[in-house]
Amino acid sequence: MEKIIEENKQGQSLVLEQKEGNQRKLFIESYGCQMNFSDSEIVASILSENGFNTTQNLEDADLVLVNTCSIRDKAEQTVRKRLEKYNAVKKINPNMKVGVLGCMAERLKSKFLEEEKIVDLVVGPDAYKDLPNLVAEVDEGRNAVNVILSKEETYGDISPVRLNSNGVTAFVSITRGCDNMCTFCVVPFTRGRERSRDPQSIMEEINDLWSKGYKEVTLLGQNVDSYLWYGGGLKKDFEKASDMQKATAVNFANLLEMCATALPKMRFRFSTSNPQDMTLDVIEAMAKHNNICNYIHLPVQSGSNRILKEMNRQHTREEYFELIDNIKRLIPDCAISQDMISGFPAETEEDHQDTLSLMEYVKYDFGFMFAYSERPGTLAERKMEDDVPEETKKRRLEEIIVLQQKHALYRTEQHLGKVEEVLIEKESKRSDAHWSGRNSQNTVVVFPKENYKVGDFVNVKITECTSATLIGEAVGYSENN
Image 1 (cartoon, one colour):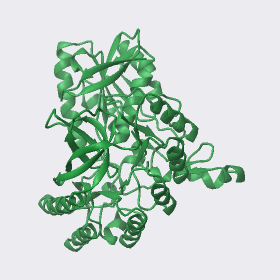
Image 2 (image 1 turned 45 degrees about the vertical axis):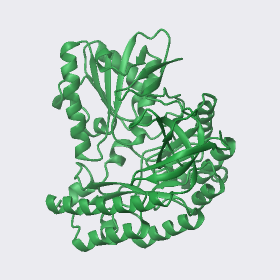
Image 3 (image 1 turned 90 degrees about the vertical axis):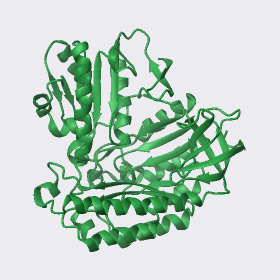
């Protein structure tokens, strides 16, 4: 595998892995969660063994794949608009083939071929190993579909081709699927049941990244705190495991310890956590190891106990507060971010005020906030009336956003005057004279380039801030460099 440097649309240099001898070009785009971006790297790896190298230029592609998200209707509409762009290019290059991957493919299945005539193949998240066969079918003039969900597939035996890579940070998938069945969420239906990846294969992938010069890894899963390896199988079947399997099982806290201990100079992050599944030993592992970043994405969705129950979230407002208190007690400078939904069915003004008061208690560093979007096939869609008027949803969402912006500025101001370790990831979007990286708390830090380079760990004194960005001056390399 050789590496070439190519620029993306923003003019940033990207490292692309290319296999010598491959003649066909693959253009792949990803939308939605980080898991989709990780899955796209698995797809690129599978197709690299079957004659395809990736390209950043749509017009050059023999095969175009879009990895989709179904979490909200807006995400699906974005994909459909993108398909219009592909159609325009396909009129110029009629030999180009177009495929849809991911959650939207799993949800719509063969219906996609009827709705979008441009689409040649539809492939669900657990069927990527079948892509060479499906592409062969398309090459012979037939449409191809595989959207069967698996109870075993983790892609642990695939070494991903890094896409759009800065050569510094990478995603490593550790679990797939979700068992939590939140009433608003399509993930259990599009990604299947929870199953975990063999820790040995995880460590092998991370060690390989380290040998290639990567400095930071994000461990990924729909619910990383549910990670549980006992020799294979679904998490729900753990109680049936043998005594030996139970005695030697590896949970998420164990996995964090393994990663942090094996590679003390590499930084580790993880996403996403679920409040009902995050245990004290995970927080203790974070507190113990300096190379586990002090940042937790901890979706809550609502501050109202009544709405949390309607959402089938298996925690209360009070239990969430207890978890926040434990995090702040053990890791005082830990940053916390949220997912929040406004206008869930039957949400009252009192429920909304509960959400705002929860936000006041936590004062999140940043967040991802959305108006409720009814998703086909979910329990909420089948059993609940989407009865909150759109104007009310939008007004409540705006109040949530305004409060979050206030808290974000409050949190960034806490960094002023401090010297913090920053991993340089890329050139600043606003100035080619500045570097951009992130601190342990996942906040973007911008500072003058001087003689530093991408991949350096640098100590930066924070002198200014906005609600989203820290600005400072480098004062030297950190001890991790």
